[in-house]
Image 1 (cartoon, rainbow, N blue to C red):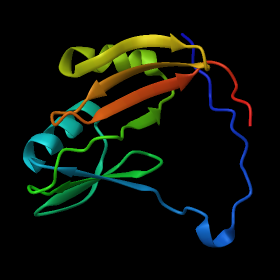
Image 2 (image 1 turned 45 degrees about the horizontal axis):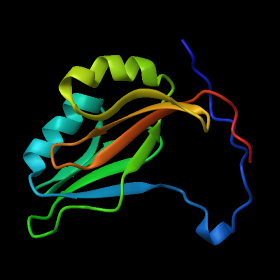
Image 3 (image 1 turned 90 degrees about the horizontal axis):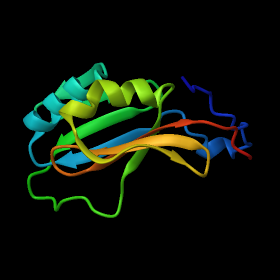
Length: 134
């Protein structure tokens, strides 16, 4: 099985804008359905929850779901998540999710697949297959 780490070198950043924590906030219409789906699909630990939201620890960022019933559906964005073994993850979840595209080898140096959550938000998972140039 092909598994490689990312080969990105650290870059110098302005001290005042150096990210100490990254949070991705996903506004959802049905928190109960979305939370159940994310818990079952990814098994990320819950780090905080309240009446209209939940926060998951992904390992490198916080993924937040917040109920906003009057917000329009998200468009024009998606997330891509690097994982150590995209092949195993695909085998584990493929029968329980809606696939946009199955595993594929990409010319830019990774293998990926894309799914959507119950409200149609696209999520791509990938594993680098060759070193990236910085």
